[in-house]
Structure formats: structure tokens, C-alpha cells
Length: 306
Image (cartoon, rainbow, N blue to C red; front, top):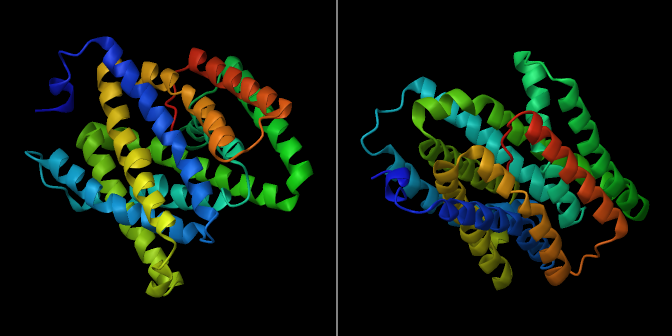
């Protein structure tokens, strides 16, 4: 039974609730990563634990989504490898690395620019025209991030610049995944792509660790391991399923709009758990970014990543 069939009898609010919970759970990733860094580990180690615990779950999802489906061709595997590399391996690594230098709030705002990057990639790669209204939305969105970035860099210097560039690189990598995944989703199905591509990314991250670090460095504080379990389950696998079900129930556009609560939950969690301040600059920048993404959503439906 498909996810859509199993939830067909549910009311519409069920999809809205799942979209909201999925956005909040995704946003918790940055909080967990920042907490892990307090125990003296680096981005490579944190992401390796996330992928170690996530790999069995995504392999199971791959098996479930592949039941009764045609066997994958060599072309399919090349496509899935590319999607896994850009969408989950490279994007995750750059994001985790950037979080070593910037706040969880700034990280979430940068990632929230994803729809604007998808739009620009469509123009550069596929010659999809951008309207005046969309250019205006882009300008507003980036102005919001610049407000927060300008304030933070005055306090943190070059580290903030480095972290911002790394996280923006993550957003570009994930937008590349979205730009090239459209046809693959139609042919293979969303759940199958997520399961297999993420499994490939898990293996790549683990190999990355083994190339750079001796296995003995996996001996870390118990808190890092438990945070890795939470990251892999509550902040990765579970929200993937929630958002997929929500998209099938209420549509991608509505699910994306509900997902706008994600950055707000990051702000709240960062204040409560990380003691990060919520300044007037952050409030202004967040409001402007929200406005820009809302303007873009009104002008053209573009998926928002968590």
C-alpha cells in the first residue's frame, strides 16, 4: 500500500500537521550539531555518526520503495549517485562545516534561500526566464540575509565569512540536487530516490571519514553518540517521511508554505537550548527573508528545502 493510499482517509489537517512537524524536526538538526561541537568533535565526525545511524533506516526505505518496481539501470544508478552526492553528501558536509563558525539562526536563514537559488540555476542551466517580480523577491531575500550577516561579521570577523560561504555552498549543492531531480522523481518515485540517494550519501560520508581519520577517533563522548542518534532519526529520517506524506496529502506548494515555520522554530530552539541571542538585527533580517520567500512563492511555486 502506498503512502498516499494509507493516508487517503485522513482529513486535510493531517497533512498540514505533518508538514509543520517535519519542518520543526528538520530545523532541530542545526541545534543538535551545535551541541555536538561542545564536546570537542569536528564536522567530519558529527556527520559520520549521523550517517552511520541513518544508513540502516534509509536502506530499509530503499527496499520498501523498490518493491514491485523495475530494476534500476546503469543510467539510473549514475543519476542516483549524482543526486546522493550533491543533495545529501556535499550539502550535508558543507552545512555541518559551516555551523562550526556561525550561529544556528544565520545558518537556517541562508538555507532558506534555497528557492531563490533553484530559480537562478533554472535561469543559468535551463534558460528559464525570471520575471521582474521574481527578481524583486530575490533582492529582498538576499537583503535579509545581508542584514544578519553584516551584523554577525562585525562580531565574528573572518570566521563568520567562512561559515557563511560554507553554508551557502551547501544551499547551492542542495539546489543543484533539486534542479536535476525532477525527471528522476517522475521515473523512479520520490521515496525511492530519497532512500537510495541518501544511502549512497551515507556511504560516501563514512568513506570520507575513513580516508581522513583513523577509526580510533570514533571514540567520543557518549553525548555525541546520543546526539548522533537523534540527528539521524528525529531530525533526518522521521521528517523526511513526514514531509513526503504531507506533500502527497496537501501538495508541495502548501507543504512548502507550512515549512516556513522551520526558521522560526530554529530561532526559538537556539535561544532556549544554545543561549544564542535574538537581536534586533536578527529579527529584521528574518522578517525580510520571510517577505522575499513569500513574494517568490506568490510569483512562482518553488520548493523549499528543510
